[in-house]
Length: 363
Image (cartoon, rainbow, N blue to C red):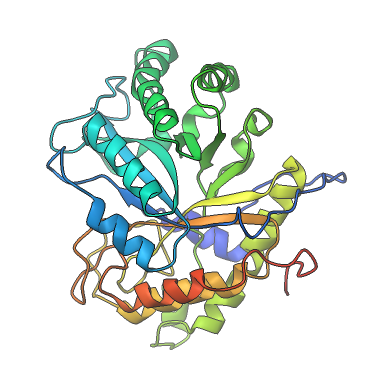
């Protein structure tokens, strides 16, 4: 997920809409998605400090809510945005045995498993995150280090019977190096026999020029749905309602639909998530805010997402970010555990997905 709040970008997105795809006269047919293959998923970060920690109880919780899919997330770290030393770090990354066990637990629970490697920065300055990585020693060193991270994970995913493998997540500054990504995807094709995708940041999908080499389009959906400053100036004190938030999805949904038609593939929402705190509608990517807990806003945000996207046939599914965490009524984080959002998601998963091909983009 996007880790740093960019207020200017968010405000501009609300005012004019962030263009996900260049406008073209020609569009491609988007294959329909069956109810059986539609992803009603939850991300599960393997973020415990114990690399051997057993995530089985969390997998069971996700299954009990009615999810069909689990996106298992593995973090590796590089020193800063200029480095190329990508490594699984003790106390921050799981062991390979834990990754294997978790994927197998997901499948044993009757759900489909997916695996997503993520690069994080050990030292993060202002506005620093993986989307602005600029390796000082050049591309060769960084991509070699990245391959050493992801290739063994693709082997684990193949052996464990995972349904999909995400080749990268929100590496916006490195996406222009198309040849590097095509070479990596080709290498992964020889190791992983099922679905390959890439997870583009919500405001940068048009920067990915290698969608044709992948099986599906992956996109995070941390679109700003409100503007707290504008509401305050208008004298609005209450957080936006679920219906107001659902209406705010109109422009992002249109952009997602245009992206699917441009590429000729349905869009998988690889991350959709909200922290349970005030301001989550304004900057859903911001994981560093200390705003007060707002459980009901988190619940309304998920309801608005589900209301909007059951009218969006160009989407092939979604993963909620992220089940890992203690949760509970005092928790400000993203996990829905022990919060009203968990019941809201259960109701969302139970809806008749996917959207009808005749639903269109509701206005």
